[in-house]
Image (cartoon, rainbow, N blue to C red; front, side, top):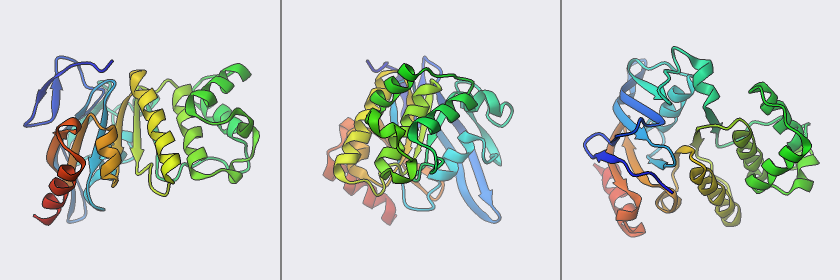
Length: 252
């Protein structure tokens, strides 16, 4: 069941409970080019938040700052109250990340990849636990013993979800995870995100897919030139209304 929170529409922040992911007055520039400008963003426990925006809007930069790959020029981020710049190990222990192309070891099987990445986070898995994780992630257990270089993109993403489940991640960051997936694989992936959401995981997903954003998102944020220019409850918009809203912002 999704938790209820008071919501300040001016900032997008939730009050009453500490957000799992929080960005406050975030700014970042690359040379003279601003990538983020005073970004305020919060994602609660058991929430799927979808970030929309054109290429270069700042979506990936936002994710990279949460991951600790980049340091902000101004403002701050918190993951379960932890600053990833000050304490990257503790912050990353709470995170799982699935990029557009999931980076796994191609000569290893799905099971071997799961076992390896779980061990990196200090988790030793039994065969039964591995099988259970693959079932929860939607990957056929028989396929888990095949080399990853034989996998489709959707199968690689399922291994990524199994890894996130194994490390008991509290937050999941996704960067264009639906790009290149056929409709069936996209449906399966979205079902797995719902499962993670129901288990209490906070999900922040950068995407170009307006249809899936409306279908999945508790809230939808629209970014342009490093700013969050709009934020809406996904249930308050029809698909045509979201498309019109997005296009209107892109034309401003």
